[in-house]
Image 1 (cartoon, rainbow, N blue to C red):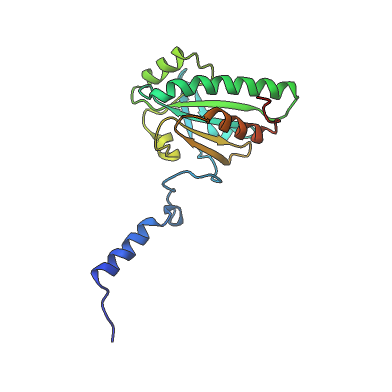
Image 2 (cartoon, rainbow, N blue to C red):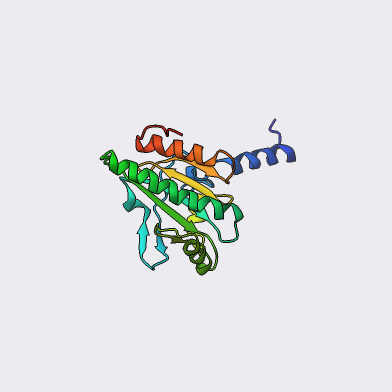
Length: 186
């Protein structure tokens, strides 16, 4: 005799289906994970140019999501600018074929707020803008600041959500590994 599933059994099955990655059904994953390929996005820079992430292959990318209203972002972004400049100098001195590109992505609805913050903090990198949320949907940073380290083949290797004690040492260590640079002396 065939029995009908109970309400509880039906809810359990539905809950299980909801947890399956949507990629299995042709959609996108809800969260970008370590080991995933960087999403193929093209974003506008503060200068109005277009920058395609797919065209950055061959470079190690330091993608940082920031917001003008985010207090920790005010401290993190200058640190990333300094760290990327330091490591780029080391790469040049070592005659490395690898390069590092800092790509800060401002998530403010008003792009002018992201641009003003980047200017105030003297960010020399091309500041990318995400007023419509396309990059946030693709990367799912969850909170700000959020930093994604992408290797030269376009694979996400490290993700850091938030900013606090030990941040510089952790991110610098990850970058040195991706760039094949020796550990820092201090």
